[in-house]
Image (tube, rainbow over all chains, first blue to last red; front, side, top):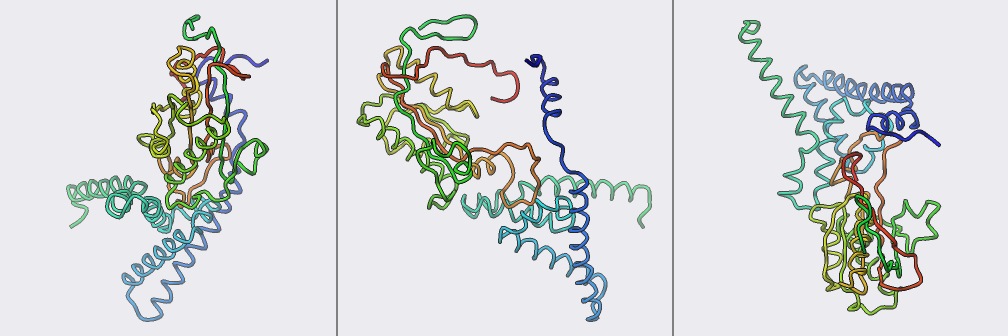
Length: 151
Length: 195
């Protein structure tokens, strides 16, 4: 008979001891090669744009647009979540993960209508990233301006 | 019926669980308990166009089934205790509205069914009711939508993460019968590990 578990901490320790660990090495490896492929695809699109005589800035924008489209399309086909489950951060960290985090709530909440469902809930996952990402960049911009690092 | 100790109620004439019914989803049907369920669904939507509607349909059909199995006429059921995981307990509310039964909406997360069974037993024991019905439902997809992330989001789940049941269970509690009996109830104090 096991010792009775008195506190929440004891219980957590007991659970941690019994539950299997995530296969970190395998996850890292999968994230690495899938993420690498996504970035290589981006680079390939960029090179094609450059070959066709586009400017660097324009090519970069086109890469983002194409990757966002592919990710959104695969999300709609119920394929992206399988890639995400397999690759983890590999598909989450590139812009593909961001596109997925906006398209998936939009699909999920479509059943609640286009205004309050799709419109209202679209940013439930990506919202915090946008709010704090944009806020942080504004604060950093002000700091840069004060110290005269940007003319 | 009397209170024993700090939080237990003991019944003098233990109410009996007259009949039970359950309908579950496709994942539950793959498990070792499949043969004990009344019906296993092949499709998580069950012909509906949203998970919430599917969950309502599951609870509605489960209640229909338990009444049918008990061979009682519907107006013999005095009170119904029901709850689920969704906002305003919509799957129970919408699932039960066609039955025209007096309805108590309850919420206890994982403990909703036992909560309903306890209250139904107290009603039967106190003679406020001859037959009380308790039921609950949950749906993996609607629960994920309500509490966690959209299904299409490409995130990873830990190997030990829990999986909300798709399905519903119902029981009719009566004052006398063959058993099993509810002899006493002890609600737990809500101070750790959810419900």
